[in-house]
Image (cartoon, rainbow, N blue to C red):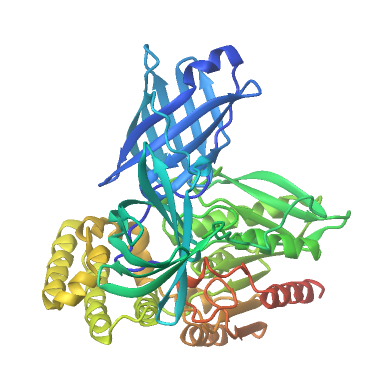
Length: 579
């Protein structure tokens, strides 16, 4: 789901490359290559290529997004041409080496967009964060509206000058570069321009700094203690090989869109025909694991179900990873056709799949897509809605915005003002089809909104509002226009097959009560006698056991997906497919 003022990073996750030429031909690409991608702002990137065991290996840095030493696993070269396939971010780079072998000129493709990217060979050794010898590590905990966030300041020396990196493990942020304004025997000051933050403190003793964290309008006490190592983010549920089941890399065709999608099929051990589930992700370009903040919920679900006799197909969204297509031009009905293609592929696998026992499990927007697909394909025999919507897209976004801001401790005055603004914006999105007129109206509404803010509110939300007008085209994209106007009741009222709907009581993105009421009313109108709706206490939008449900907790929580929810899903599937 989307927060109104949230910006989108271009590069995140893990990037990879693979090669297929001789060692002698490959050496001309070896080195560190620097360039900038212009996406409205310039994002520096550094590609490091070297030879290992006669083959290329590579890592990618995106310093402004705090992403370093990103592993690469697919590179192909042909003469002076090089292609880099970036699986996790759904991107691809195609370039040509110059005659003097000092530049690579090409284009990076991602999410339906393309950007020129020229890379220049540099003699300067780029900073590889994992190789930095930190001189000291300082850790403290911020308390914001009852939510605790750990911060780690990592001091190091570069070219005889002190530098600092900042980690926020609980928010999934790492190696935010900062400046050491001073660091002496009495006091310290670190400035992080990128996030509009700074820390100022005084030494109480050699192991303790008493100070404050400033960020926009925030002014919070922060005591730092000297530590020996950086906080490790743990994901204990993530499956590790060897697996007690078969795992296949598969491809299947969406004939309507003329695209091929790539995914992973996990098959229980044995020679039977198994019931099967297709996993459908939430909004935004997602990989097959629905990777978020180092959590891989779809991988965890697939592992659990497959260990319990249920085959699972999870796939990369169109335009992501190994799936073809243009994510940026697609709307929810297009994603429903992708899900149908996945179901049809499973139905063709009669060697291991029972074609009469195939269902779809959709998370968040995927819970909206599952009923669409089921109504368009007789091969779907059941659906599972995981935090699926039961109200309009507009209402979900309004509720979501208010709940998340409340959980973040934002004043009621500001929340009310923003809600009035977004209601006006959504009305424009629904009623004005001309993008230029819609842009003008939204810009005027935004100007009126900012004029009503207090100086304190302007300061506090400056970073959120910066560049808002440049992001208006996203609000007018085909997908967003469709989502805002969409009412899931129309599809749910036609569903006759078994339905399991799970929602968490702490879900701030798709609030449980109002959406479950909508789902229940629609299924009853459909005359559906075989549906089960369960609200799970304490679970958030990702189905983690949580304190508040705020998205800021997602990374901090070690649990990826509730064991209770996993058991309910397993038991329900086995029950309805045994009849």
